[in-house]
Image (cartoon, rainbow, N blue to C red):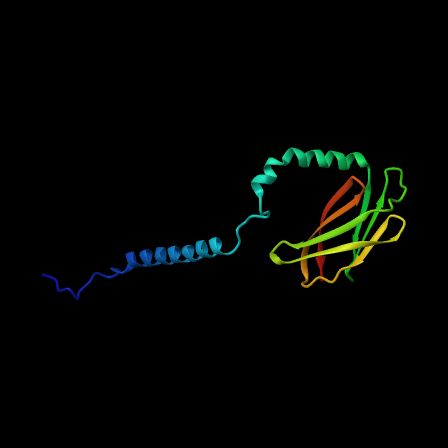
Length: 158
């Protein structure tokens, strides 16, 4: 009869697999915890309502396209945001109310809004003083009477 202290060589090899799988399960548990508790994954507060309004969104885009406005969007590294609005025939568009809403895709609490002021015929400009460097999404809205033009661009702030 063999004694309990005499084990065959390599008796612990199966425990290596059990330990390795245990580590994988623990690491995956941490990843699931942080994935659930960090970001919701929603880019809008009311996705269902926006889905219901999809046809209105398409109609608004058709109306915007029918305006024939041409927009030249320019952001300089020094912070100047300049937008040039012209008609389809090349004449400048004056009398617009232009607002830029800036969102940081990776952070919700630093949203920023600024009015662009006219500096010449059809040219609207502002100096951005954003709180953080990095990637920002600009939602530009220009209104004149019942006409509305919307534009989305991403900018890199040094």
